[in-house]
Image (cartoon, rainbow, N blue to C red; front, side, top):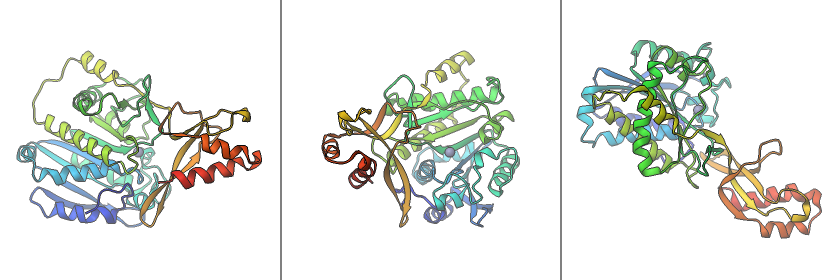
Length: 367
Ligand SMILES: [Zn+2]
């Protein structure tokens, strides 16, 4: 069972789902079919009163939280807390809500619809399945599981957004409703623990309100919902380190639900939550320092963002120059000395620089 690659289609996770279904802890159920008739499955754990609904890969190219979820479930088989969790919680998990997008490694489904903008219109079969499960299961808590691009850093720091969380808004005024406050309190529990491992590399996602997003819809209907965003950590482009951190976040969260603690006062919850720095777009994948000759009259550094391409069931990461219309990034996950490139460029006609730069960087730094 290979969950180590970032490209994660349904056929890769199916053996893991079957393995879990064969244990006493889980049952596996078909919820319905995607646009291209791939099955959308749910794993069910426990028979407790507190019900948690989670779904991952509603964006097909965001597989890290799926890997983490399956690894968390596999680890439950030997977790001393499993019996207690089984009695106290019922977890219904849809590991792959968008199997067609997961096969293609696209955000959207096979109709090119972003399922996280379809929460009101419910035009897609995948959206209807999630809405129906929400109505029938009546969860006490929802986990909306996503991955974020390597472009995010944390406001006011040099750190990348390795993980980000959000207690989505319930209305346009971003009122702190009881559901939202509960989500914030649970996020605080997670980040308090994970800061021990990760330092201050956890962010808070933008909370502008959009009822077409699933998290906003569920929060506005009174159910605490937490958005998880798995991000980039150093050069871990397969995101296995991040998956391990997300797995730890699940464990911290679910274990904490066993303890019947009173929530802290609202102002304490809010201030701790707001201490998390906000996500901002200030990172790229590679900065080639001094890659352009000084005489060029341009900025000397070159910035690259990886394009993710599926080849032979594996992802390749191909560096592309950041388009001019994009805001320059302050930081990169990798810095490269550009003196060799700069020397080579000086020998060339300026018209041929762009294609030479592409070629040079792609040959050297594709992953
Ligand atoms: Zn997403």
